[in-house]
Structures are given as structure tokens and as C-alpha cells.
Amino acid sequence: MSSGNPDRYKAQSTEPLIPEFYETRRESARIVEPDEVPVSDRARKILENAEKQLEDWYIPLVLLNDPEIHELEKYWVFARSWNFLAHESEIPNPGDYVVRYIENNPIVVIRGEDNKIRAFYNICPHKGREFVKAEMGNTAYIRCPYHAFTYNTRGKLVGCPLAKEALGPYFDYEDFDMVKVKIESYKGLIFGVLAPSAAPYKSLDEFLGDFKFYADILFDKTGAGVEFSHPQRWIMPANWKLAVDNFSTDTYHVPSTHFSAGVTAYMSSAGPADFYYGYEITAGRGYIGPVTRLNPNYKGPQDYGYWQPQILEKAKAHLTPEQFQWWTTVGNVMHLHGAIFPNIGFLQSAMPFKIREKPEEHSEAPMITFRLWRPLAPDKTEFWNWFVVEKDASPEYKEIAYKAMERTFSAGAILESDDMENWMSITHAAGGVIGNKLRLTARVGYHKSTEKVGPGIAQRTPSDMSSILFWKEYIKFMLGK
Image 1 (cartoon, rainbow, N blue to C red):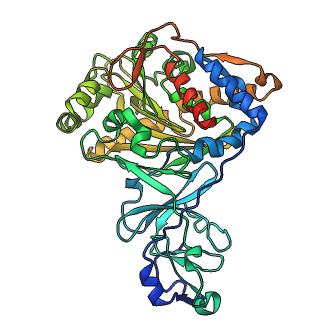
Image 2 (image 1 turned 30 degrees about the vertical axis):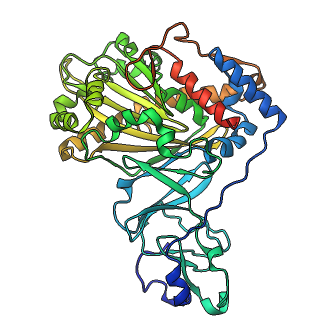
Image 3 (image 1 turned 180 degrees about the vertical axis):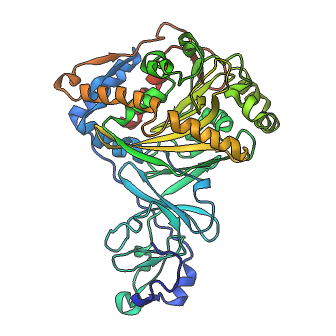
């Protein structure tokens, strides 16, 4: 990747292509889609059995650590889904780029000199080398280190060493253009799809569906939007779907899994029963759970009223009346957490930024964490974690909110460690031969009726409803429906 310094590569004698041809080709239009991957009889039997079992709220354990299922996910789930790539705040200036992945496919997301955001496979069309090794940066040109083929920020080949001798005047230059990835964005969140013609949801708007109602509250409550930090990354020996299952509104685990956090006065002053209070909601391809009674000393949803009252005032003016009413009634709790299919999780929550010394002390502040679980193997996941905060929040509050996330939901943080221990243990158990036979009885809340407390369907917690609906969506994708 070029640093943007035009003198840096003079020694390589990069020559431009013939001017007449260059002027007629302003942007790469090259799109390549992956082929459909065949499903074996064994895998189809597993998936069709899972489809039946899920109707009665059972989850086959084999789905959580099986090499063949993992390979099929690469096409049937990830190539056909809208996958989160980046937030616009990560690449604010022309020439800014980040390197991201959809499953094992490397992708460059770049803001062009025309201020338009595009995404390309991080694969040189000449000999296949990855253009970019740095995870982020700013550049005027994209240059392959192998043979110095050079591209503009719109993915168009603009030069190479000894261009006339190497390529000749009549070569089909479009074969050398970078391969585009189709992207769309919502509230600054950039999503990409690798196989748009095979995707069951042709647009991001259709994919998100009713979840947009809640995405507005999470990521654009004041109209100013949010800003994302650079991501933390680490590897955990667990299947990616377990993290999504957990974040698709499982709060039933909190008092037991995170018991040690409460013992050390690191968690909120809410009692164990308070964590069971709330709803889990499924809307579109998203899941959100407004849960845990608010501490009586706190003000407004997630305690925004204490720390940032102007956020509430701006939200009332910016959100629709229905959205603001939902946030300040149904969502007037300590935690809003959830997931977006296939592999995104989020948490907007009042979390501790220091040890609470007095019961009435405000030791918690609202923070937002946004995470992505990238599968590397059936039993290995790369964890990406971003700190998110309202753009128009005060600098002092941003620092406090970051501390709250850092101490609870980051690499090595107390709550993160608790959750990963569960996911690693389940993955290990699922890898044995008995995994092909066992089914998990995810029937908490099976007897309950659903309710209407906003867009989508809801059930009072504790419940496994949203978990089951995530798995049903997963099976639908895996079976090509």
C-alpha cells in the first residue's frame, strides 16, 4: 500500500497506462461471485434434522463443533449474508482504509478521493498477493508489493512498471481491475455481501427489516451518530455461534456466570432477581433484550439522564415519538444487549468504571460495545471488539464510558472472561463423538406466549426464544432457503 508519497516508488519506474484508455475507465466495475458449494448427504441430514428439532426448541450439539458444517458456513451463511465490515467513522478522510474480513476473505474498505466508500477484495488480480498488510492507514494509491501494479482508490489500474512493454497497447486492462465487494450502509454501519445474486435478502434495508427501529436508538439516537474506536482483537478456542447465541438476549446466565463480579462489588447494585426482569425481542435479522431493573438512584435508560442529560434531550427531538417512548419505557433499564445475524453482538449498558465503595455511589456509566465473531475453525474464533460512543458526548464522559467498557467487556475483562469460559467449555464438549447424538434442551420460556412491545416479537425473560429464532435463521441460510 502506498503511503501517499509520490516519490516513494520512483525507483520502480511505474508507468501510467495509455492516457486515452485511462480517461474512459474511472472506476472498477469488476464483480466476481463465489460458486455455490454442494452439501453432502451427511450434512443435509444434520441440517434437516436440526430444522425439525428447532420447532420444539432443541439444538443439535453437532452444529457447535463440526468441520464439515464449518466449511459449508463459508458459502451458505457468510457469502449470502450482509456482513459488518466497518463504521464510517473509522475512515473519515479521503484515502483512509481498513482491512477487514468476511469469514476467510480479506477485504479493503477505503474512502476514495471522491469521498465515496468502496470495498475490494484484498487480492491483486495479477498474481494474487494481498495488497495491504497494515490493518489501517491512509493512501493516495493502492500498490501491490509483488510487481508494483498500481490502482487508484476507486480500484482502477492506473500503472505498472514498463507498462507498454509489459501489457502492450491492446491488452484487456479490465482484467487487472480490483474486484469489488457490494456494500451498503445504515447509520454509518457498512455491510458487505459476497454473493449478492444468491443472497436471500437483496438489500441491507430488507435484511435488517424491523431491527432498524432499534438500530436508530443504539447508533443514531441524537442525529449526530456514533464513533467507533480501533478494534481490539484476540483469539478464543470456541465456536462463533455460541457467542451470538449468548448475545441474542440471554440474560438468564448473568447471576450465575457473573457471580464473582457481584461478589467483588464490580457489578451493578442490582440484585440477582433484577437481571431476570425484561424482554427479549426478535425483529428482522436482529435481536435485542431490554433487561435488568434500573437502580432507583439512576436516571433514565442506562443512566444517560445522570451522565449525559443532553443526550436524552437530543434523542427526544431526533427519534420518532414511538422510538423515544420505547427507549424511555420498555428500554428504561440497565442493559440493552443483542445481536445481528450472522455474527455481530452489541451491548449498551450502565457498567462500572470503578469499584463501587458506597451503595448510592454512581460507579457505573452507560457504555456501548460492538463486537464481531469471525470463525477461523470449528473450534476457533477471532474476536473483534469496538468501543462505541455518541459523537456529540462530552470528552469527559467519553473517557469514563471507555473505562467502563475496558473493565467489563474487553480482552481480559472480568465479564468477558466469564462468558468465554462458557463458550470454550461447550465447544470442547461438542467435539466428541457423542456430539452427533446429543441435543440441547433450550426450552426456557417455551410455555410462554409472545407479546408486542415494539417492532418484532417479544417474550418476557427468562427465555430461549431469541436463541431459537437465531438458530432457525441460521438453518434457513444453511439449507439455501
